[in-house]
Image (tube, one colour):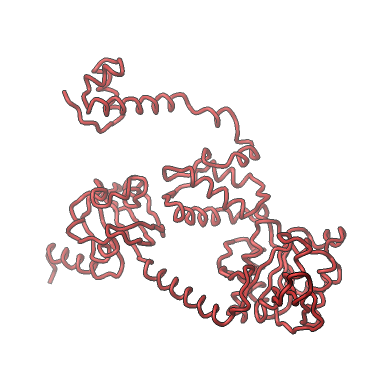
Length: 471
């Protein structure tokens, strides 16, 4: 027996209402035609308060530029996995991940549907777990806490690449996590050395113990030794018994970045720790045994550093048990599409933007640029661009000036906009001001603009302005 249309519609609504995700459907005019109970809970409203009403009338915090539903109606293109953070009508901060799709009939957009997964509760539980873990650590390691202690938040899966060489390095890094042998990583600035180090730590059996990172160039050489090895009481005026980074990292991982900035005599003491697993606090006569995996990184070639005598050869040979050379971004430009998409999504979320397109000339600039700052520089370029965007497309005008200069994109056509665009924009601006000043009276607005009434009427129809005309 075939179901009639009414039964089919009721069955469909029952199915959509039972799904454990928020579902919101609007028509081409922006009016809500379906809104389930889960979506209502997200937004802190009642279903009937939203149905048959325009989206912006019910949710005034959104606009045509920030609403994913209205953006899909406008462009006809889907938006996948878009993070949104907004206060609902009850003042609760809601965080969702949305997929928004156009509804097409005979190639024409007749509406849009949005499926929203609420991550607010999950994140709140995560914060509680982190807080609980911090309290436990505070009790257990009260005397071992240090401002230099960091947590390893990245995993090897966070490294985005389709480059064969880098993918192979990731596989070897995962295998290296099984041992406690020292690791030496070489890569230019911004290639992601610390990200890889954190990934190795989190893939190892040491992941539940301390991960401590220290940039050797960030601390005066006179203080570096006491920070690494600790101090004994009375070793100098005001000195107290204080553990160093090796003791704080006991059982875990110690990451030393820019090792070639470390004084040679301190490098000799690092070598001694690698050989016998013992440290001696500054000013102390006794030794302490530590179990620490040492991973070091350099942004200059180790062989060049040895020739320049900024890296001890004996330390290099002891560290170079496992060696990784991270390729610079200019040698793996096939990763650019993935990285661009990754950073656009990240800063869409952080900055409350809704960028869904990257113009072809922007991609051309990214491919032509040499990226001396590598992935970090690419991230900062996209963050800078998204701070300037008002629409949904990243264009060449939004890029940092140094990228355009380096790729010869700066010219008269870049600095001076098309005259037609300037005239149209200026005309639209002053027509709007005149109509607002006269409460939509075309006759009075024409007088202010010093143009015939018929001319203003023509321009209003051409510009498609939504003003209330008073004849």
